[in-house]
Each structure stands twice: as C-alpha cells, then as structure tokens.
Length: 626
Image 1 (spheres, one colour):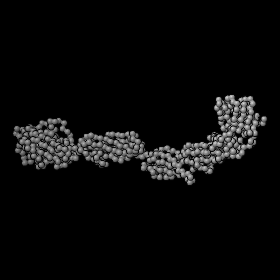
Image 2: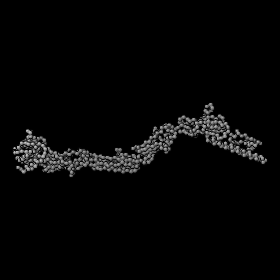
Image 3: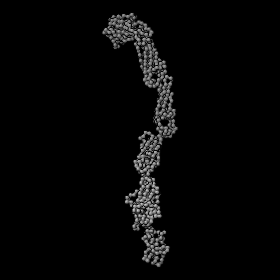
Image 4: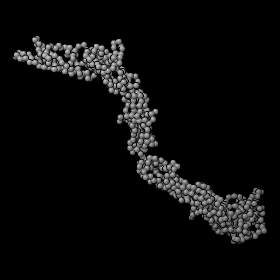
C-alpha cells in the first residue's frame, strides 16, 4: 500500500460526518497521482467508479459520457478491485472506498469522476468531482461596467456600477476585492463542475463620493496568486454652505462671500443670482444698500467634466433673503372714487371711505388722525410683507367731520405720513341755534321814531354770497316785499353775516321780517323776525335783537337822568340868585334824545337859549340839537 493512503483515510474521516446517501471527492496527491474517495451510508456489495474526460475551454457545457472504469466488490469483506488502471484502493468499514490512481493529468484536460451503488435494486449516483492539472491562479478580466481594459474609470455620483473580476486556475482560485488596504466586499468564489474559471461580480447602486479610490481584485489558489487594479473616479458637485438671512438698514454697506466645499473635479465657478439676473461672482458687494436691493439671492457653484466618454456638470446652490430695513412712506392716501386727490369735497351725509397704503420694513403700523385725534389704527405685524393698508369708513359724514386728516405709518426705523383736507358741503343755517321756540330772541319792541337792527350769522359751506342774503318785509295782508337800501333802512352783508337796520321807525315799519339765505346746497334757510311797537316810555332797557341796540338804549336812559339832574341844579341856583337881588343867566347847550321832546315843553328864553325859573318856580328848558 502506498503511503499516500494514510492521507486518504484522513480525508475519508471528514466525509463520514457529512449528510447524504453517497458522495465522491478527489484531490491531487502529486503531479502523477490523485485520490478518488467514494463514501456511502447504506450497505452495498458493489461500488462503481465512473469517469468522463473533456477538453477546456471548448468544453463549455457540452458533456461527454461517463464510463465505468473501476469497481470495488464486497467492500465490507474482500474489497476486491477490478480495473485496468494503475490503482491502489482501501475499503473502510463497508462505508467508503478510497483509491490512489497513478496517472498524469494532461494540459487542458478536465477529468470528472462520480461513483454509484445499488440500493434497494436502484442505482444511486453521487455528485461529480473534477480533476485537472494544477494551474496557478490568474486574473483574466477586471473591469467596471463595459469599460473593458480601462484602468481609470470615471462615473457620476448616484449612477450604478458593476465590478467584474474573472480568474482561472486549478484548484479554482478564491477571489477577493480590496479597496486601498481594506477588504472591500469579502471573498466570492464562483465554481463550475466543468470549469477552472472563477468570477466575482459586485454591483454598486447609487455610487457616492466615498467610493472614489483604488480597487484591487486578488485571485489565489495553492499554486499562486494574481492581482489587478483599477481606479474608480466618482464625479460629484460642489456643496454650497448656507448663508443666514441678512437684516440691514437702508444706506449701510454689505459684503457677503459665497462659501462652498469643492466637488470632483475641484475647479468651481461661483456666481450670485437674483431673479435670474447675475449680480456678481463669488462676492456680493453693495456700498450703500437700497430698499430695491432686497430680495432672494442664490449662490450657484458649478463644476464640469468632459473626457469624451463621460460628460458631467455638477451644480449646487443655496439662497438667503436680504431684508432692507427702511422708514415707511405713505404711497397712497385717498377717498374711494377720488383717486389720489388730497383736497376732497363731499356733501353732508355722503358715505366716505378712507384708503391709506403704506410701505416700509418692518411692516409699518398705521393710524388715521383728525386734528391729532386718532380715529383708526392697524398693526402692521399682522402682515408678512412690506405693504400695509388701513381702511376706515364714515357712513354719514357731517359738517363736524370737515377738517384735516393725516395717515401716519411708523416702524422701528422712522415715521412717514400724508395729509388730506376733507371739505364737507352743507346748507346754510343759523350759527347759534334758537333755544326757545317762542322766537323771543328774534322779537324787538321799539317805540315810534326809534331804530332797530336785526342780525344773522350764517353757518354754511360754502358761505353764501351777498346776493344770496334776501330780506323781506311782510304786511298784515301776508304780502312780502324785498327790502332794498333806503334812507331809513339799509342792509350790511359780508359772507357769514347780514344785518338789517331800520331807523326813524314809523307805523308802517312794524310787522314781520323774513331773511332768506342759501348757498346752493339743499334748501335755503328762512329766518323770521318781529318788530313790535312800544306803547309807553320805557322804564327799563329796550330789548333789541342786536347788542348795539341794547347798548344805545342804556346810554340814552343814563343821559336823560344826567340832564334832569343838571337842570334841577341850575334852577335851584337861579332861585338863590333872585332872592339876593341878582339876576344871572346861564347858557346851556345840550343834546337830548328826541324822545324827551314829547315829555317836556320849552318856555321863552333869550336868543342864546337859557335855563330859568318861571313865576311858579318851574324849570323851563330850551332844547337845541348839538
């Protein structure tokens, strides 16, 4: 027995621990010897060894027939071998037969073996084992996708790549893929019963930039090792670093640089863009920023690659918002349907809607004022943009609403505003309303020969013209005639007032007077006055509708009392002179109200006019108008 049989026993002991009814294995013992071992689990009386020979690489899948070249009979007892081959066999406990065959393997020849036994009258075959002349491992192909023979492969990030490594040798080589100095994906062995080639396929889905580097395929068996390398270049765009939003006051300067991390290739073009308009290259610079510069700015970084096989353009971008803070301005302040007129005229009881639009950043707060009194307000923080709108309605505007209105807009930067004058047209009326419906304030009681002034102050917009004040005198027959200026009556009119004065009152002057005044707005106003006769000398101040009449009556009464007092004193003095035998005369020139002429009679005096005492001791006065 050959000393190689001892090694066969060791191999056989390994097979005894495997599962299956029948198995065959083989290995090369020396360049001229190899071992074939068949192992089974059930009792048998005959073991058959079958052989098939093929030529590679032409034998790619087409099988030749297996032939019976070796039998071992009664392995449990005799272990009798029948064959024409130079062989030495040994049987092991009726469950295995191991044979060493002295035969040289030829180049490009593949020998395949299998064994068979009869179990329950059925021929049961084992697996197939392959033998060929030993051959060191050799890599025949290492490529990415279809880039055969290319040692530097360029791929775009997120594309799909499949690395294929093919080797041949016998025993069939083990194949490993290494990136740098690290085993990248482990070991993969692809074997065939009729081939000495091994193949490793590794697919990368969505390749990324971290996969850039050198990859090496290593194939090895007990007779040698082979390796082949390629470089995988992953193209990817640059990464722009985000810029925070900027808040800056109008008029200040700004300088912002677009920062980025280079991609592959590292050459990068950078530019700032706002609303599809290119503003600058890497640096965004404003010496004095304006409100129109506010907006969204985008930094775009681009790299490109073109080697004929692969075309690549990588783009990345980041944007920031430039907020320009500025003092608000009132863009529009108007009444609806009046455009932008800042001096608006409406009629009383019209519906008025104020519309005020302001712009500023931060969004301005708004107020509507009338003569510094706040009418409405709006909080601009409730709006996210730079424009704020204030709307205020007056359902029925009145004369008291006439005046100057101001729309103010304010924020943290400053204050802006616009003014508007609202002119309200309304018909004429009395400026001081009559409080007593009995019309006592429009009634005058005057004696014959006296005078009276009726006054009227108008409240109107527009104010009436002089021609729009018309005075009438109405008789008892209800016939009213227009009054014109004369020697005893005259009218004084100026825009907001009109006075009618009647002097040397006669009987025909008593009655009702009517003033009609208008201004073209609504119906004319009618004001009624009454002039009544005073039947006796007044003992109290005479009531007149005018302050001038009241003052004149008071002064007249005071003057009469003074004259009476002077006359009495003169009379007393004359009587004293007469008693002492002296006659003196005193000249008196006085001015007296014509009313006194009806109550006193004059006695005879000298041509100069004198005051003296009658025989009865009464004072006589000659009245001369001074």
